[in-house]
Image 1 (cartoon, rainbow, N blue to C red):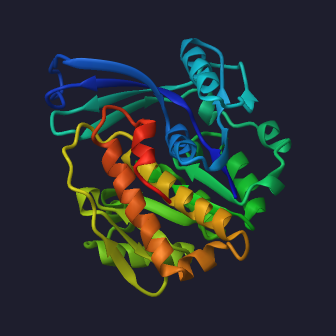
Image 2 (image 1 turned 30 degrees about the horizontal axis):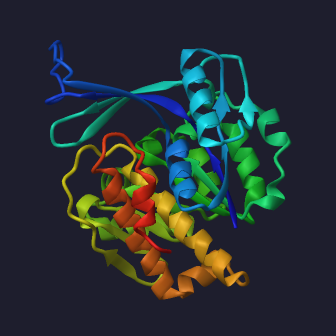
Image 3 (image 1 turned 90 degrees about the vertical axis):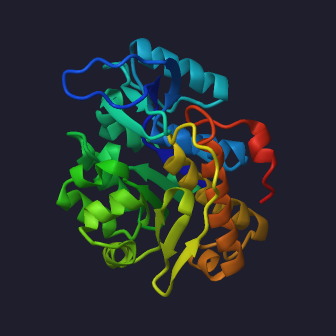
Length: 314
């Protein structure tokens, strides 16, 4: 089983601060780190850690940030599938407070300048899964992705819109929801989008829109999912949080990994619906996702070591 990871690789400039500054206030940064991130890159890191077959479909542009990304992708062994030298890649200021909570200031680059020709040469016969983040649906050319995605309704679409779900147009979301994506949000995102007062009502509302499994992560409290029959809560892992950058990306990356490795193991009847029916394996996948996310929040940035992956046998 193979996954097309579609989205962005950007440069994360991580700045440790005691707290967010008030308007007009100056706060000193206590620590700084520069790394490659972006939702798609973070998800791909998890798939790569579990040796899950995938391609990373992210544009690399021209400029100082693109050069950093290009070097890193080459170092990781990725073939760069989109070289577009029109402009530089984007970057993200990641402000991490003492309690590990993070706030982002994102400057977009080539990753939101989608072009139809990027998708024309893709051989989709080799993929069963597609991962898509929300940021790619906020740009001026988001209709290019949507129109292409609507032709992929036979694939498993893992859609993690993230905090920008409320910035995506209603028309775009309706089109995405019409192909029944597997939806992944955190608690705050789900409640704000559905305007519900509790998480159970929120997850039921989201299922009405997608008609497929909905995952809502709850931080250290774990995750809940709804499969059209039951709302199930899987307890999380209580750990010391360094920062939460990439926690959600790692969670859905582990869910895709668990499903893909299960499918490769049985080698037949490996549809998503059959995976759901294998309740023990599905629950194991959710528990794995909680554990991987807990590993990510214990390090600065979103990347965990190979030793972390080796601890988990799936």
